[in-house]
Image (cartoon, rainbow, N blue to C red):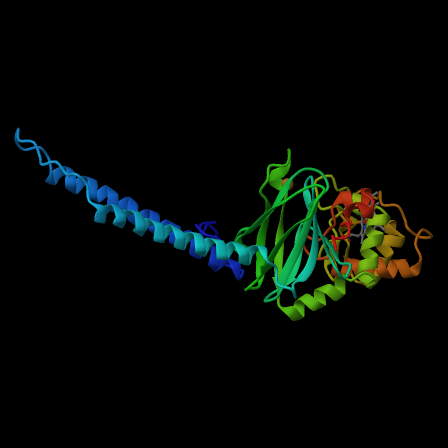
Amino acid sequence: MEADFELFPAQASTIAPLVDGVFWELTAVTAFFTVLIAVMIMVFAIKYRRRSQELPRRIEGSLRLELFWTIVPLVIVMYLFYHSTSVYFTMITPPADAMDVYVVGRQWMWAMQHTGGQREINTLHVPVGRPVKLTMTSQDVIHSFFVPAFRIKQDVLPGRYTTLWFQATRTGKFHLFCTEYCGTNHSTMRGTVHVMEPRDFELWQESQADGSLAAEGRKLFLKLQCVVCHSADARARGPVLEELYRKDVPLEAGLRATADDNYLRESILNPRAKIVAGYQPIMPPYEGEVTEEQVIQLVAYLKTLGRGQTPLRVEATQPPAAYRAPEPPK
Ligand SMILES: [Cu+2]
């Protein structure tokens, strides 16, 4: 826990060192003058304390001194203004070759869409070393998209687009937060930005692309309401199916089975053949409900279903159009 606690989040984008630069510069200037003034007050208070009844000589002012303490702060402040403004312009100007991602905020989740058709909820996969431009809008109230490790934050408003851009400089997983209080579950409106090597990102894109077996299987998993029982939350009535492939599954009456392709297929078409220990035989048989092609898609999907990737229950109950970001303005 202590190792996880850092005063500053990692610097993981090209913008992060620029923002931190401005921050430290301001802190240094402020600290310098605070200390200077405090020390001078103390030194002068002691040095010029009243020692007798005699009154000090009157000072009528000094033009040179006035100029000095006007021009020096002016130069410092103008420099700070120039520096922070130039960083600001860098932050608000996405490079022309940036990769587009569309983000829709809603109570209480982030829905991302890639141009290739890949869609994700509360996760965002991006390649390292490539500028990414987010075009964001909200379906309900004001949200705010904040990735501390990238030092980027932008309000997400209903009825209009706002944009953000970043270029990740290292691979890993980084926190994404909503930083605009948006209702009861505001604090759960967070996610992960998953920065990958370009090669891994391509593989991820292919595996998620519309039309791939696993992607079609995922659609079925939602359409056939599998997710209603196999959700990863407390209301689930069936086992979580993440990382199930090739696992050893305990069955009723002390039997065991290996979750290979056939087991998965049988579990879908004829779930009563093998009941997972600790569960009721409530899963409806899908024999006759789905074609073999669809079973293949479902199995392909379950084989790729990793930890934390179970879709949210609402994705099955909401029409997909609800997540589709409108066309960006030309
Ligand atoms: Cu929010």
